[in-house]
Length: 170
Image 1 (cartoon, one colour):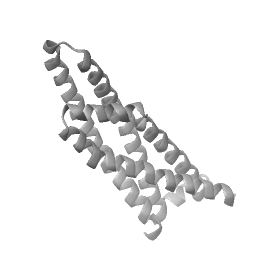
Image 2: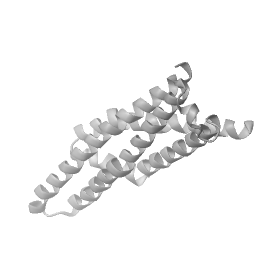
Image 3: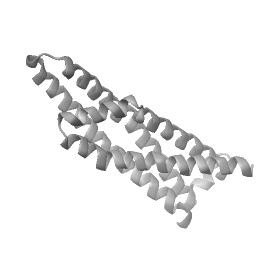
């Protein structure tokens, strides 16, 4: 049991740091830099997409949630209700709920907006000049969704990290 718990903790914390840190860095540093770069920023987005950065982040989030749920199952003796009423149980379950919500925001909000932006970027490279204003409007709409969902996702990641980091001390 001890060996498996150590592996779960390494996955939970190690991959969790990569996922949360990568998401927050992308949302607060890289994303605004890409937006400020204008059309050149689309090249960076295309390269991140080509390197499957966003898919890797979704995979990392999946590992964090699965390892966290298994650790929660172990700590709560099979999800016993009494554990969830303890201060630590409330802290951990709040963090897990925020993690899952942040993950769903990324999966169903951020990722589709990124895919849409990548597709439009490819179309713009081949588009006739008269088609570009419509594509630019679509691109701006997708960027707006990305910024909105990115902010919500970042908020839930911050809540998750703070809840998990402080649960033991409640």
